[in-house]
Length: 205
Image (cartoon, rainbow, N blue to C red; front, side, top):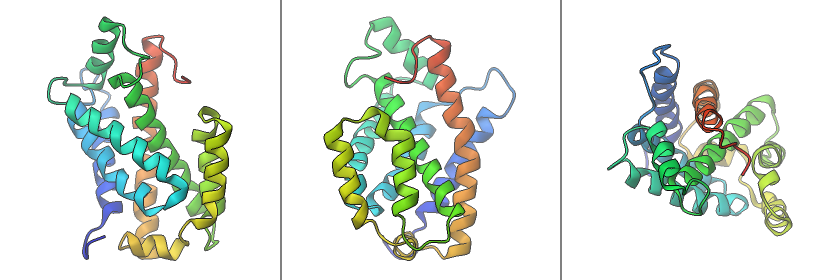
């Protein structure tokens, strides 16, 4: 992490903007792919800071955010992105924008739960918060081999202090930014779930 960079603040600020659009109460307002993928790209840094336990998540997440970033060149909104794949019958195909969006959404949700667990705990170890977040969001979609590898990697997680140092944050500042992300990401995640459900696509595949 370069001196002076504050990825947590970038994450919090970008999701506050997305949440403002979702919460505008204007039915004409839709979440655009470009700012969404830009906000998601800031979260990639956090996965990198968590070490080997979430290396699989970092690689998978980054690749899928990159796909959405490229899709933004020709597709305006997340709703249009789903419609695009529905028209082509490719929603559930590996590598489709819709499939990638669903996986990115899970990454965002995992970070949300992780931050909730970190704020609820005073422990220096991140093993418990990270284990809860993984079990709640990712584990139901992973096979035994990946779950076992992640469990082993949990012992190599950085301490809370080490993570904050990597993110150039102190305890109080990090708490504020994490809380902003928790509050802002929830309606964005819900918005994406509702997009899939409104198209009768489900969200558990």
